[in-house]
Image (cartoon, rainbow, N blue to C red):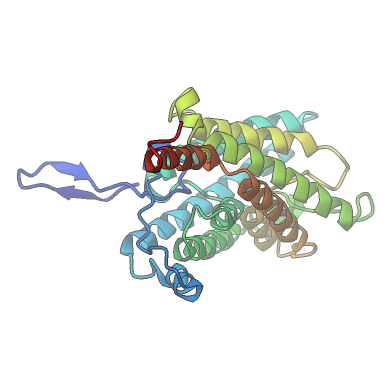
Length: 306
């Protein structure tokens, strides 16, 4: 969603799209953050923490994340309720296919305006990878959480308290009689790591745009989430599978007014995110380019050497 402005001849032209390295739009990854590197670490940290808070465009992008998270969680909860109401014997297939299209469409719709994160895990992972600035990341996380709470209230208002409770608000539940809390935490951690590893590869690696074009990234990210969600559905009765989106689980908890085991849906993704962050910093997608640049500069600085 973009604001429109009018030029001198009265035509409507779109405003500039949101640009930052953590965007899922490959053509909008120019780093527009204003802070510069300093030789003093305290100055660099200060700039990192304070940059961007006065940028109205970042606040607008956070608002888009709020709206997008609200819509995503609401649709997801209603879809899960419908699938449960049909008493289908193949819920994994329906959930997997639905996630592919649902996530892809939201990323396509939101990428020009906010980068298309629509998930606190993506925002936090791009922050720890250095692709999303501190101010943008914090505002996104707050907006996504409030969006989830709003969606939960809307789900409960739409279904009524009795039906919302009967269908667990849409999902994210755990029966400790059939699956231990530690097992659920491990499943959530591993699936989040796998989801992020693949999403960073197909959606945020600048080299992938050269391989399959800039338009395939959001669709492939949707496929990633659909596949990882499909892999854990039906593991045990009373556990609908990994979620990899703590905001979504928070929305469902609000809808059913039950916050038991809520920490699992937050601690698991945080653990998976930190694992992906370690992998990313050990082998970032920019390391080959930097090595080539260093080699070229060494050759230019030593023209007499062979």
